[in-house]
Length: 150
Image (cartoon, rainbow, N blue to C red; front, top):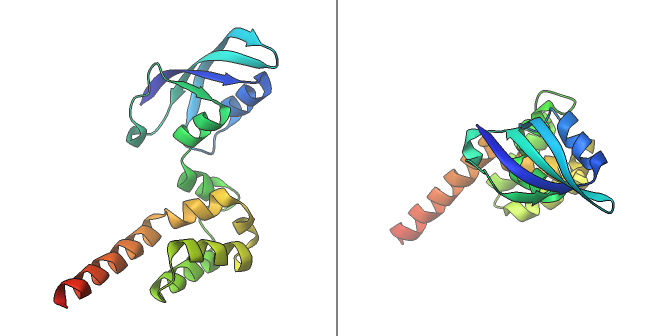
C-alpha cells in the first residue's frame, strides 16, 4: 500500500527515514518543498503495510511518522537476530501465566531480560507479538468464563 504524506523533519531525519529498511515501511520518494530554520517540509511517497490503511494527505512530524508507519514487531525481528530472544519470550509467557499484569511483565523484562530489553520498542514489540497476544487473549477468556460460572 502506498500513501502520499507531508513530513516536517530536519534533512538528516528525513535521510535516516529514507535509509531505514528494518521497520516495515519504505520511502519511495521525497522532495523538500519548504525550509523553516533547521526544519523542512517534505512531500513523501511511502510504501507501508496494509493494516495501517491509506494515509494520503496527512501531515506528520518525524516522531509521529515513525509511530504511525513503523512496524515494531518486524523491526524487532530484523534487528540483529531473526526473532525475539527465547529467554525474553519465555520470561514474558511465564509471568503472564503466573498471573502478572502486562505492565508488570514489561518492568520485569526491563530489569531481568536480555540486553535487547533496554530498548523500549523491543519490549513493546515483544508484548505485541503473536504468541504473547494469543496468551493474553486466552487468559482473558478464562477469566470471563470463571466470572460467568460464579
